[in-house]
Image 1: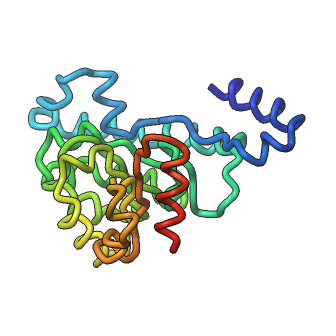
Image 2 (image 1 turned 30 degrees about the horizontal axis):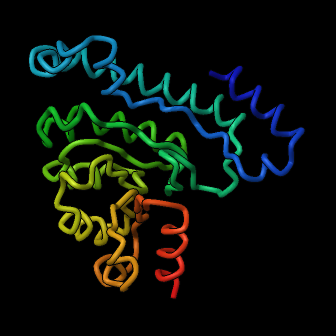
Length: 221
């Protein structure tokens, strides 16, 4: 992975126009719990109940490994805005994005007590960052928002969630939501601005480049 990043830094350095358009970003490093689940399989969920101390030790080691790798990989990225990075093709507030897809398979209380401290360790060491999860995160949104040093929440599947309820919680904490889906009509007529006046990164899948330009123009006006 690092050799790939180094290769692109070298190639893009020789092509200034492309260099200014393309961002070399941190790879998807998942997160402490997701990586433990990838290593151990679904047995990790039983272990959270039967041997939580062993799980805690494993999560601590994985958090430190993620921090070390992220620090090394950041030497080869080309994100330029301080305290912001690109992930999932959008800019988000924070220096890293922790993936927490596995977290919605445990209770919010178990996440808060057994997993969140290790997520917080990663976020603190790297100067803050976002938390991502696919699936329905309504029940876990408050726990994610309360993780120390979290600076954004990335919604993998906003259509499965009560985005307005999550937004209300996030707005109180001044934590932006990333990849909130917006329809073409609400972008054109300004409804989305009233619904989400601040603190969101909106995503819309236009049918063509011309349609995208038309919607963007109407939204700005």
